[in-house]
Image (cartoon, rainbow, N blue to C red; front, side, top):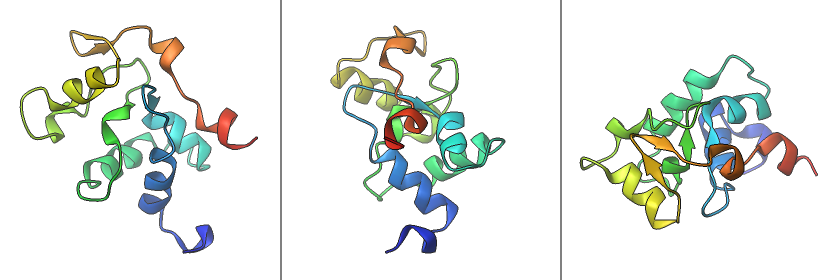
Amino acid sequence: MKPETLNFFDKVYEVARQIPYGRVTSYGAIANFLGATRGARMVGYAMNGSHNKEVPAHRVVNRKGLLTGKHHFDGTNLMQQLLESEGIEVVDNQIQNFETLFWDPSALLSE
């Protein structure tokens, strides 16, 4: 499928699939990359609808590194468990060393 024929959610999924293992990004960073500067909430809706689409939605958090989408995952702590299985430390729903682990699609995909 050509990128110009994808709807917004599909574009979000394409970006999310490129988040490297052991790294995280934010809803806003994906929205900015897609040219929707105020579209962070729409990215969140896309992540919520990403089940069964092979999208690493657990790697998308809020701009402060908080696991704000964790209630959309099956199980009590599944989002945290998935992140920790990739070596990401989470304390009180907050990603530790967020600045170091942050993956900016605008900086890295435009190269």
